Image (tube, rainbow over all chains, first blue to last red; front, side, top):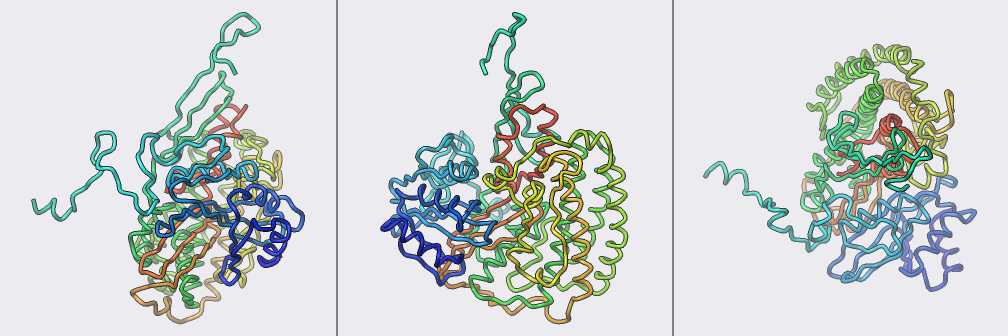
Length: 168
Length: 379
C-alpha cells in the first residue's frame, strides 16, 4: 500500500483528524491532530492491510518562527514493506501530547529522549525522566533558542578558544 | 517485592541494589545498570545511559554538510563507515546528487570490511564477557588486519571519514584490492577455526542456549534491528528489503536465527547470526572486487553544498542494525536538524524487560548478545 492509499483510508476513518498530506517528497508525510494521535497510531499498528508494527523513529523538530514543535513519527511495516511519516504540531510554549508507549513499547525511550532534549511532555508516559542529561540540567538543548548555562554543578561550561589560550 | 520480607524459615531476606558500571569490564563502553537482586536472581535491571552523550545531533546544526561527516564517525566508533554512509545518503537524496559507480563499489567494500571488524569485536568480547578469554585475542588479531587495510584505504583505523557526499574520499588502489582478496582467503577458514574454538564449545553453548529469549512480537514492539531482530527469526535486512547503493546487484543470504541449540530468539541465535553475517560479508566483498568498474571515485559536488529545503530519512544496515539519519534542510549551508536513530538505543530499552527473573551472570550474556555500543546509544 503506498502512502496515498494510507492517507485516503485515514481520511475516511478519521475525518478532520488528518490533514495536509505531502505525497511529492521521498518519505510522504501527513499531519495528525494531537488529540487523535494514539487512536490513529493504534489503528495503523494493528489494522489488517496496514500493520505498521514498527515505530522506526520518533523525534521532534523545533520551529521557533512558527511557534511550534513538531513531533515526527516514522512508521514502518515489515509485513508489507511500506512506510508512512506522521507529524503532530504542538504549541511551543506548552508542548503536550499523549504517549504512544502502549502501541509500540520502544516509544518509551524515544519519548524520554524528546522530553529530555526538547521539553515535550508526553501525557500518560510511565517513566518520563531525562535520559541523556542529568536530572538537574536546566533547559532543553535541542531547542533552537537554547543557551547553555555558564556553569553546571560548579563546573564551568565555557572554554576559551585554544589559540587564545596558547597565546596567553 | 518487599525490601524486608520474612522468608518461610523465619530468616529475614533483603533485596540488594548493586550498581554495575559505569566502568565495569563487562559493560562495553560506559554503561551503567542499577540492578536489584534477590541473591543471584535479578528482579530489575534499570539501564542508566548518557555517560557518552556528546550532543552530536546539536553539532550537526552548527557545521556544514561536508564538515559534519567526521562527526558521524563518532556516533558509532566500531562501525564508523555506516554512519558516514547513512548521512551521505541523506544529504545526496536531499540534493539529488548522483554517486559515481566506482564510488558505490568502494563504499560497499569498505562497509562490509567494517562490518566484519565490528562483528569480530562483538563476538570476541561476547566470549570474553562470559569467561572465554582466548577467542577474544583471535578475533582482535583478525580485526587488526582489517584495521591495517582500512588504514591503507583511507588513512584512518577507526574514525574513517572515508565516505563523502558524492562518493568516497580516496579510490581503492589495485594493490589494496589484492591485499583485501588475500585477507579474505585467509579469513574465511579462520571463521571455521573460530567456530571450533568458541561457537561449538559446550560450555559456551550451555551459557547461551535458551537464555534471554526475545519473542518476535517483542522484537518488533521494541524495534530491535539488525542481528538482534534476525536472531528472533524475522528475515529482514535493509540491504535486501529497502535496497540502497549497489546491493541489489550482489548475491548474499540473510541469515536468521534457527533455534539450533535452544529456543528461537535466545542469546545463541543472535550470536550465530553475526558469525554467519561475517561469511556473507566476505562473499559480498569478493563480488565487489570482481565487478568493480573503472572511473572516478567521487562525483563533482559543489564546495558550498546547499540542498533545497526538505527532509530525508535514510537508512542503512549497520552491524547493529537499522541506522537512520533524519536530515532536515531549510535550504541553507547548514542542516536544520540531524537526527541519528541507532540500533543500540532501542536494544538497550528492552534490557529492563528481559532482565526480570534471570541470573546476574545471564545479564552479562544478555548485554553481550545484544551487542550494544555505548557511543551509539548516547550519541
